[in-house]
Length: 475
Image 1 (cartoon, one colour):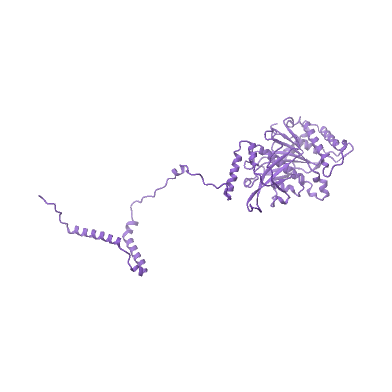
Image 2 (cartoon, rainbow, N blue to C red):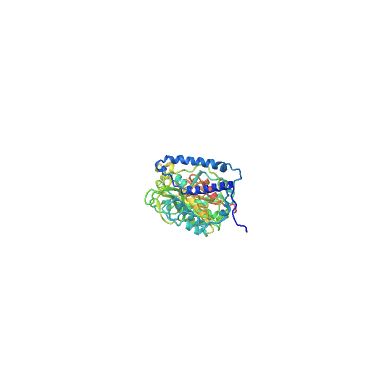
């Protein structure tokens, strides 16, 4: 039987086994080898030992590591499609609603704007828009402040153009053949003048209240008689219109910004808030909107005055009460568009009194300021009744007219509202401007002696008739 004995190794195999044993033993001894105590005594030897070790590694591994000719594996390209398509599991990071940072203030403002946009009706939109009560500047249309018209132009972003727009001027030339008799209308106006200044015996008026005895009832009779006589020539003035006597017109808006000067909110940036509470003598409202005088994006000649001081210097005072927007009727009224307003200049602002005070350059200022403020408030309220506001600007212009008089001198104004974006945020890239056309005051008559009206001016009457004959294109 054959015994299991291993065959003797050759000399070459014995040398290979010895080398493997030595390498493994050296590896184990190297793993257990402690740092030489010379390194603690002579630290500068550490750099030389590390350098020699680095040269040995570079000599042994550099040709195989950096001169490898085989194809290298490309790094994996991440696929962003699954991450982009997958919905986020967390809500977006937004600013706090109660913090004092700018981002928090911007978020509160955007939330308030969105609440107005989502309002289901115009009444609800107006309620939300005016529910935040803050101190606001009260704008008085009839003011004796010096150069008040320039301040009102800045606050309403209105360009004043002397004269009347071309459609209105052309209508005045064609008025004499429009189905009305000039002699009959002149007789009616003269009868109204004599009724108030000659036939009635009136006592001496109180100081600054003479306007209540003569001019006020005359203007009421003038508007009523001319409207009734011109209803056949202009169907808009018939049963489809409404004549309001001493109505209330209100408008609230934001314009510009200011820094809070004092108090616990010192340094904060607040918008400038304005409120107009107007009370014209009478006004005519219609069911359809008047035709535009110029296109919506028309660039009017002239510039808007820039006022670099606060309205307190006008002077203008702050009050806090309900923010109201009102055209003289509720939103449900079918006569939601304005036609013509009639304003009566108070005794304090009459031209004779201003001339006696040597304020010759301020004679026409009260009329212009009254027209700009009153017509802006009226047309702006009409636009907001249609759902427009500062963050949802108008898509069509709104037009109104005004006749301003002291009983003898008459001036005529036309206003076209092209924008409601007057706040600091909405007016950054807004090239539109509101436009106001106007004439200087001219007398309707020279004097009233006994039962005769001397120097009656037919041009003023024709201009007044032309205003009342203005109608929408659809009519």
